[in-house]
Amino acid sequence: MAIRDSLDPEPGLERGRPSDKRADGARGDDGFLIAGRSATPEEHALIVRDQRFDRSHKTPRWWHSNDPVATAWYNSVSASLPRGEAFFIDTLKAFRDDLPPRLAAEVKAFTRQEINHTREHVAFNRLVQDHGYDVESIDRGIHEMLALTEGRPPEFNLAITIALEHFAAIISRQLLAHPEYLAGADPVAADVWRWHATEEIEHKGLVYDVWLHATRDWSAWKRWQVRSLIALLITRKYFGNRVRDAIGLLMQDGFERRSAKRRLRAFLWWKPGMMRRMFVEWAAILKPGFHPWQHDDRALLGLHASAYCDAVMPAE
Ligand SMILES: [Fe+2]
Ligand SMILES: [Fe+2]
Image (cartoon, rainbow, N blue to C red; front, side, top):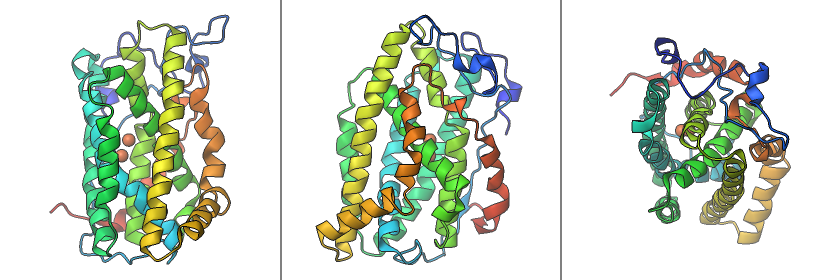
């Protein structure tokens, strides 16, 4: 479904190809973006791939390469997703009545993508739980963290969503650009992650575009300050909690806390070292004038259809 093509150009929010000069927006003497401009490619469309993965497939306990550490990391991330993605959807709801038609339609597509992700990760998390892991306590932790956002200004929650969607987009790029990250993983589980990664990359600019529209009356300085500060705080908190929960899962496998910590640190920062490799890309969010589509990785979206359509089952 190519949503963008069917909609009128959207007033108040300019778009440009990432290769265009416009992608960086107009800059003032201080180097900050004067009027936030989107770098989302003009012809880019969100495609809702309503896929359901094989529910009868029994994923092994250590589904990633028979490696408890890799499994624990991905399980910890997956356990955080259902509530996290519901938060993103709710956050955008607060803005939908004020959006230009094109952006409003994209928010609808984004919402449908995230609802589908949640459905598949709930099923995935159930498999993890069936192996005896305590996933509910992770879910409760996310609930408690998100409760802190209640009653905050909607722009505050939007900045949190930008930070987490940026983190998701960078991880997704790593997963699709470097197949070795999921090499050796259970094929159906790996397909869930690749499918999700595809749509995360595809909609990575949407929340940012809503932000540019919602804060169009803010000064560039204020916009940069709020987004950067929240990105630092939230990413640190979220990452720290994912590490904490992965260690908790490893301890449920019988590892001592110290050994679990050491192994997980080596996995994340050394081999395969995804965090080390993605750090510079993550830090781009702190740049004045940042936009997620300044890094054009649309080529990765094409990998979707070929690699894992065999695992997809018809709708129940
Ligand atoms: Fe998602
Ligand atoms: Fe997302």
